[in-house]
Image 1 (tube, rainbow over the protein chains, first blue to last red):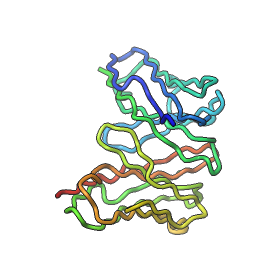
Image 2: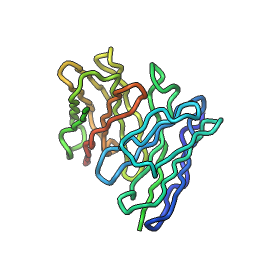
Image 3: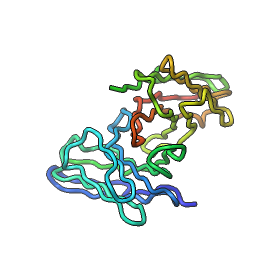
Image 4: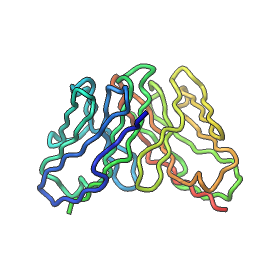
Length: 115
Length: 112
């Protein structure tokens, strides 16, 4: 069984640019959530996708957007990058968005640095 | 607004000690609670998931308890080893779509 994978592992961008991060969910999982983790802090929820639809959103501006594909993989897009967007971006997948199958399994993360 | 607090922020212990990490949350209306381990610069590894109807879960040397009424969870690590050195994160699920709300973590160092 393949776990959650993310690409790329590291990324360096300059302020104002746009970035796309990718996530493949664990086999059989239809729900993907994205989190941002600043250095020394716990992860913060960005949004969740369930069966290709956004299923909940945290306190992040609209320049953070996402997609989920029919195979349940997902993308996180960030436009107009700011210095404060520098963080570890984590993707998590689960069997279902709620209920007993809601244990979340995380990928290794993408380290984004904005200069 | 749900908030999760972890105490202590950092802990350094000699190998072999039993230790307790604490997690508290402000709203007892949680769906479940999950403990994670994070190695430096890496993703999160799920350690234990406690459903809201449960009081504790055990896996090997780890035992996690949940007291919803007092808004507390503890992670007990028995006979600590240097390989246990990592940051331990507590997260609760609140709301209808499984949003995890994390504490800032406890950074554990176990020295030989």
